[in-house]
Length: 107
Image 1 (cartoon, rainbow, N blue to C red):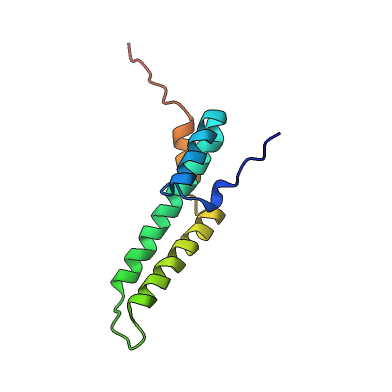
Image 2: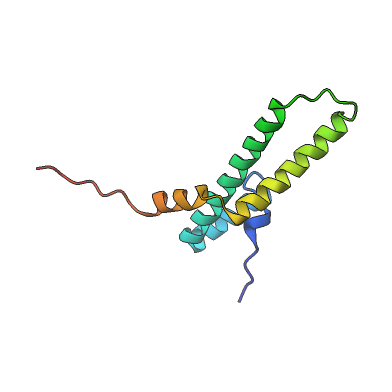
């Protein structure tokens, strides 16, 4: 029995994480859908944090390119942790995408 890798630490933007997600999609589409939705939630949270950081003034004495780099790394890790706990976006996406849309004919 092969041990399945934990994909929660890998983003789909990472080539290795994307290949793992593709393999998982072939083996278990429902699990892959949940994983892809969680990764989308992570990317969404990261974009939201980045927008919030960009909206704040950064003219302080301690602001430099190095602090911006470390802040971006912190935001990425924070967004992965927050999405891992779930804010609900991934759940809604899974619910929406897992059920086929039934088209009623009005004839």
